[in-house]
Length: 128
Image (tube, rainbow, N blue to C red; front, side, top):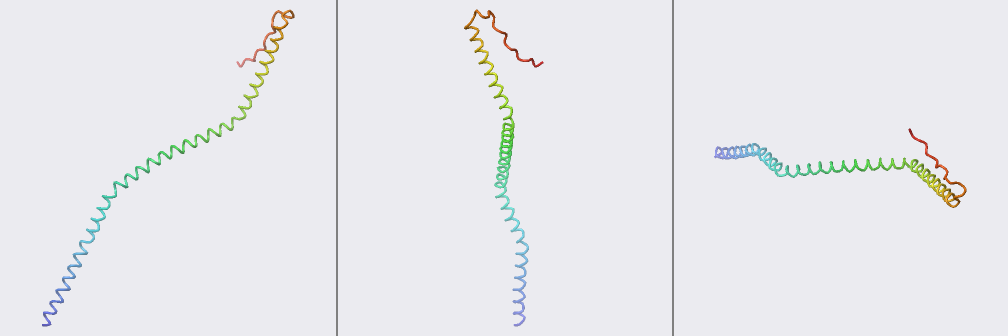
């Protein structure tokens, strides 16, 4: 009877050992299969996210370039205030000269007996 008990215990142990070996032998392949399945499902979505991010990066780089260019243009405009003030002064001087010429022509038209010809207009210096 002890032999039968011993054989039964040995059979149980060998069955458990066989089952454990089977699980250990197949478990990594099941895990790898699940991993592969997960990658196949999620990879297209990840690729889409990557392309979206690259597109947003390109758009952002373009916007950054535009802002930097606009900032440099504004800085250039603030540096040009000296030139605008100079132009303003020259325009005011030209308007004053025009007014004086008009007033001198008005006086010469009012008294034609004093001088038959009008005085010559000043010529601007040539820039040659």
